[in-house]
Image (cartoon, rainbow, N blue to C red; front, side, top):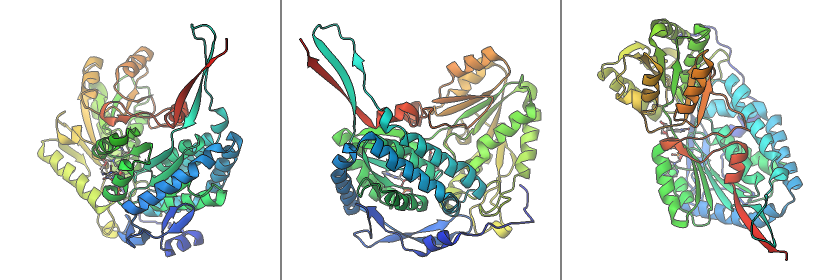
Length: 501
Ligand code: NDP
């Protein structure tokens, strides 16, 4: 971990300073209203632990009001022509583009991630997704069926599911919100969004931009608050037809149980412990090691697809481990508003403590701590900063090898051959993502076919595109987001039989 002696601090935009001065309410039925309980909570800057601003703590009554507003808005929104819905969603995307820097600063302040990542990656991805979904209303169609019963014309049509709930995490708050708002609204549904309590700011700004874009009142509602109150109320609410959730596997299971009462449609994008496998035929060892470094450390490891289990074939194991250790020590950890920062803080004191517990458990398990492991002090002491951490000689059944840590902690394993690594890579209940580095074409395809994961990256890692479906197998989730598949998940399919003879 490199000390960053020369700092260039990015200046806060006046619009962001103004946003932070305000006390933020809930967006219900097109109006900003305080929580009915009058309660609010502080959202903190993880780079220094200071309060950024105060946000309403929505509860059961507020969720109920938001769902009622979404129910009222539903017929009007669904009745717009596809072209009208497209125009409004494109206007929404235009406004996101116009306020790109502001959204990125809010994300950096609230989440901690480096500003250039927030600006160049997160906000760009979110805008790209909004544009992609904005184009869908005019492309949603049913099919005509060649039935064998004579005298019938049979077709299907897609209809909105109804009122949807989106419950989102803190690691990519803007993208996660758009990934649910976009397809829900494009398909003619209305939505209530409950962002993570740690990162409500970009969701609130999105609410403002949606109103400015002319999206009618009640179509998008934003209820900030806590998971056990607002989140639980949404997943239980009888007026909600679908819940889309991204977060921990544990909460995902609770949401699925809560949603069972009125048989809500549920899509769950959950945790992972993704394997990244480097074979000794890699063309460029340094490039592969660099990819492995960023597979785990980007977003400070707080990434559902983090390549947190690195399997390296015996012939290159020592060289890769040495390279990784050197590079991990060079990474610049610091506040997201420092232009040089490569890794920001963890999201909260709670998350820092959780990751530190895993590091201690790793040491106790007999694994070798190659680098990192400590909380960073000095000018970073008031934030939640942790040195990029690498363990080697990790037992396959150690907690650090099996559980999602969601922090900058990598376990490196040595393997001998393809059969062995497939068995070990597939041994966990998760199945979100996997990566393989090899120059052998046949091996690349064999591995892609046999790895238990919703996405497999070959000679690359962590790429997304709005057109490509994403989701997990096993305990990593249910359903797919992105692509045509998510549009199907936000619609009901109706078959129509017409007797023509
Ligand atoms: P959670 O799964 O608790 O939070 C995700 C979202 O769910 C938040 O909006 C949260 O609200 C909400 N929520 C929490 N409890 C409930 C509930 N009972 N009913 C409905 N909604 C609820 O993640 P955490 O923030 O607690 O993080 C813990 C761990 O989860 C991480 O260390 C990581 O391992 C994993 N995680 C995985 C993510 C992924 O993308 N795969 C993303 C985030 C976390 P609130 O914020 O108010 O609690």
